[in-house]
Image 1 (cartoon, rainbow over the protein chains, first blue to last red):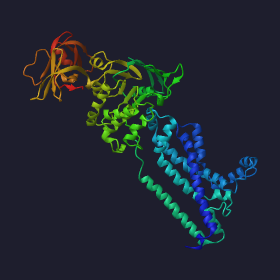
Image 2 (image 1 turned 120 degrees about the horizontal axis):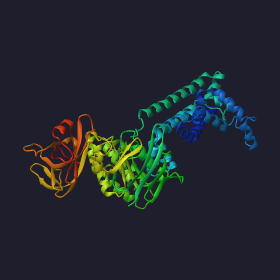
Image 3 (image 1 turned 90 degrees about the vertical axis):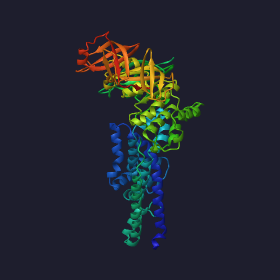
Image 4 (image 1 turned 120 degrees about the vertical axis):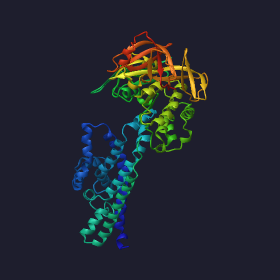
Length: 230
Length: 359
């Protein structure tokens, strides 16, 4: 084991990456649920619009997203104004700022699997539940959510992995401050900048293995397709 | 006795459902009609699954829909049981979980007994722990029916529940549905495109065409009438209620009597004096002016012609006869009709090739 693993700033970066990924996943599963539900209902002009907006982070360079967020959260941005008025510390270069960036950046990765799960179950389970006296909220909790479980698992794995792997947004918003906003990906960047290739190699290899296993677990989930609804 | 009052209007781009009818709130009502005639849509409107439907639905004292008073009771607050074409069991619950789903949401003290009754009625005791994926098609439908029944609905809607089930399994489910009729005191609407099922299971018949009621009446009357504006095709038949009068165990035959007439049918463990309904297909009846002798056909009935429908098709006529007060239908060629010189009032002998048991 090279000394890189005992370096406290490296451990802090790994810890922060995991913490950020965990919190982002939790927040996103919560945020994506009502949004995906709404998007999965009958198509309309507004839904297509919102659906496209939510998907933008997939195609947008992370630096662009990070830049706009930096401006918005900054002292002269709309959100910065609000935090200043409420006498809160600036969100830029803080964990909360990273979290907001991560949530927006990974939103499509949560929305799409969950929305697909909602859409693929069709209207029938909802109708059956209604004829069995279940109110809409009751139906959602006891029929829709259990049936959409595979979608939630996929969304969780994707968001977690995607958040661990993000770079542009966290660099823009967090500024790569060791122990505060430095995560694995920005730490690797720091190592490369400082010509510390050995350390960069170890962390990079770790990320590669992690990503591989994340995707492998998803493939494993797909091998056991969810029960067909007959 | 309370009634089911249905006044519905549902307008779609290429279809309009426009139904005004009152049904007695008891027994099994068959709903028949070509595909696209609005059978399923009617059930969906009754269940409240079509939010665009306007009009009025009263079931006894309860009003489920009254567009004038802006009343629309949502599905989950209507006491309705709905069995869809596919069993639509919840895959994340086992059989018992599916059965309990509705019961736990009905706030009555008798919920547990309703569940037990439904399990008994549909014979599901041994399946309760099974996963839904491990059930046969017939078992799935029985679970779906029991699940709907366990909520003690005021109205049971069966939407072609036997379509996805093969013939053997159908025979397995028929007795259960017949049992529902005799043991439940609620109206059952049974959509089917199978005349055989309609004949076997229903007492009343509602025939739909292009979203409207074509005719309505007792199944037995509509099927034997020449006036019914619906072509039953190959399945044109009459239903006769009779009593088991004699059993010949040697030949495994049972003698079924109705008024002064009788027919021999296959003995299916009948007991003497049991009432059974038999069904005679018009294509299985041939006519003779003289009493046939030495024929392999055992069943001959003396009757009188009461009507003829000539516009059936190019080569056949549908002859209606009276046999006591029961009606009989025979499909014969126009050529035979002419050469036998048949007319209303002609007395003749009807030879019945096969007799099916309606139930």
